[in-house]
Image (cartoon, rainbow, N blue to C red; front, side, top):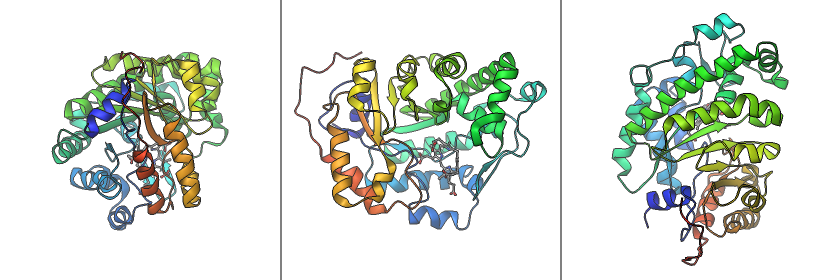
Length: 350
Ligand code: CP3
């Protein structure tokens, strides 16, 4: 079974002989070959140069043998395409003219994905051509709430007070902002799919900052709108962080795969959500700073947790800067080595 078949079977909730394994933020700063490119080129320039994005996307595939190639880009690229100023410096992202008023929300543009972010589509086409039909290529976008956090806060997100103030003071306007982001994201992801993405992931890194009621009122409907808008063209993976209190609600996003962090027990998540949604995760990326035996034990336990049914092995959040490359390698190899007997008692396919 090739990597793409493994990945798609896992997305559909089916059993696999071994889990597909990849790492969020796998293309990045822990790799010396990435740092070598970044030493001479600014981050946004790299994102906007398809040849460089191609090269960086392939680096973890070549070096670690991961089972999926995620295109090198950033969740903030659409914020710029919607008309905002964006700086991605060494101190992290900065939006120097953040959204603060209804007029700012009205100014946000529903951009044309091919015309305004064609560099990303070109990178995806090049990756798909390079890896061929047997390797899944992943597109992605930020989920509207998480993107809105950056667009409203600008730089720091301490307490998320600015974005929450906007949400509480002008709930209808904030809803309109999330809807606008959702509509822009539908076109953005559809273009990625047309360019050759096998599946797409929505990153909702900051959903856990919301209580259940606000999550259900604001963040979740915008995610559901995107997933409905994609209309089942390819599997959608939905990443949530610190989402224990949101788990059942996040399970209603419409995503094929819910990606969870290490705070959530995979077996409990399966028990809560049932077999209709696959799971992705969930090794703590900090474990890769631990000793060999710990990495092997934790990874093997995570890989075995769901018996090989509807499970993509990943970290619970992006790989951290400074992670030893050998530890990343060990995570991937250990996960790929866990085998499952062919079983017909698996969950019925959806
Ligand atoms: O997964 C991949 O390898 C694809 C590339 C990718 C990047 N960012 C590259 C990147 C993806 C999928 C992202 C998503 C992203 N970006 C998220 C969601 C996932 C998460 O980690 O929570 C978020 C919140 C961002 C916003 C962002 N971009 C931050 C906070 C930062 C700076 C701090 C950091 O964690 O690196 C970035 C910059 C960024 N995006 C870098 C990379 C490789 C580092 C830039 C550099 O210095 O070279």
